[in-house]
Amino acid sequence: MAVTDDFRLAKDHQEAELNAGRLEPLRLALVGIDGIGKSILMKQVVNVIRHQFEYICHVELEGVDRSRRSKQLEGLVAQNLCYPNGRSVGIDEGRQAWFVIRGKKILIIIDDVDSEDEISELLTPNWCGDGSRLIITSSRQDWSQLIVHQVPSLSEEASYQLLVTYLDEAVVRCIPQQLMLQVVDECDGLPLVLEIMGKYLRNKRDVDIWSGALKRLQTEDSIDGYSEETSSGRSFMLAVGVLQNWRRVYS
Image 1 (cartoon, rainbow, N blue to C red):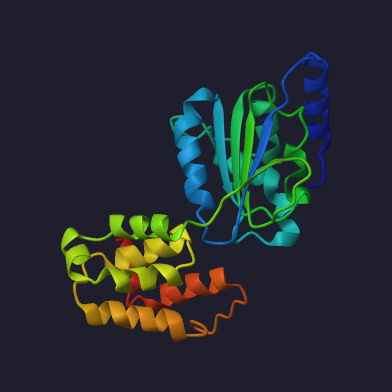
Image 2: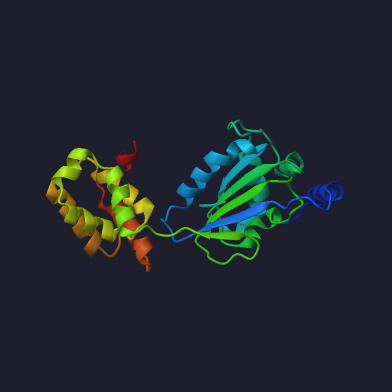
């Protein structure tokens, strides 16, 4: 984003007002492959700590043109700025957001960040108050100005236990454990894939349905023309493709 004169003045004003011993905001990157559960983890963290902040802002960059993300960040922050109880602050212009939050204790969450350039304005310690937090999610591993937390894939045992939480007890009793473990193995330890499969199979007591789902996971190369070189991306798209009218799973 091109730094506006208003934003420069805001940062200069804060730098002059805040003493040299102030705590810099904590900047954290939750990183991992697509479908690993970064956003799920981030939401859990936010639910625990949201009451500690004066303002909260959650921005999703998915769907925003990558070449324009930095330029649109100001407006996105303004649109999504709210109080801890979820009530919108109601700012009309993007530049007003920086004056509202300057020197305040604020939590900003940004999903799907590709580079530090996209969030450069939020990496200065002068835009917010002591104890503020910036949390991003990304598939990129290297970040020079953020503390990186690698979100690992689940072990086979943990993956199995997660899948079972979505299943009816009758299903767990009817379906051979070995078949369930084969489905788990094709999910690559990805919580999002396990969630999709678990919600689809939650009341399916027919072994043939499970076997059919497993066969598609094992044999299909792409879904609806989607091709992904990484096993994680392939597993996610295949899990989606297994479902018939899969969107109803979430209704």
